[in-house]
Length: 348
Image (tube, rainbow, N blue to C red):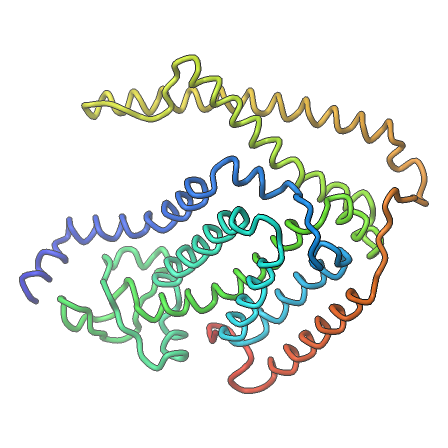
């Protein structure tokens, strides 16, 4: 063992590095989502802004089918096909309004998906599957053996670990696990991008109409739509409550020059956050009551035969898009059975 290895694999240092690595992945994902997007970003995510391009004129049922087909084909085929589909879906964002504003939301979500999945697979992908997929596995750092109880990647043979040498059944971080995580993330981000494209380019009422005309019970469709449309209202109530606390001189950030002062500050912050949650719940329940009254006044569920203020109909562009999506689905099903193009467990 080298001098650097003696430092890195000192028991105290080894446990510290292992615990920090186990926590940094979720922490970084949460930071990217809430710091880069923020409350206002999430509020705009679920609010429709109209446009005049062909994407906005497509039938909502076609865009719903786009999300389903993209998700299905990405799940059935090899990872680089998912990457091509993801790039194609992202290219469609050029035909939306306020592209920069939408990218400010989509890019952090995609980046968080890559980081989170790569982090997770780097330490939990089964060693035998990684050997099957990549032929050999290279360890980057070995964690304490006791962490094998958490299901972390553990070799079933003697393997080489940098700065430590050959170790019997090491547990820890692998390079192939990171690569595998990055590969399979393309499947998830392709589905995420297509789903967000539906939300960005379709009015919520049109989504509800499309779901009902597709055979989904109106009660279930209304519940799903109401859940999505309630997100901005909850975020707005949260932002209003937190701003009210700040205006009254409440500092929610833990501070303290000594450990005891820091602990007391954290306890005070938790108390104010719990008080804010009570206010947010009250405002949300009040808003839910108003929505229920509005639905009752408009005769919701008064008749099984509904009429529409603005009906949706399939046009020529919709049928062309439908044909392309069905062709993509058929191609994906075919490729899933071709050796080297289909996805099998732990073979991206």
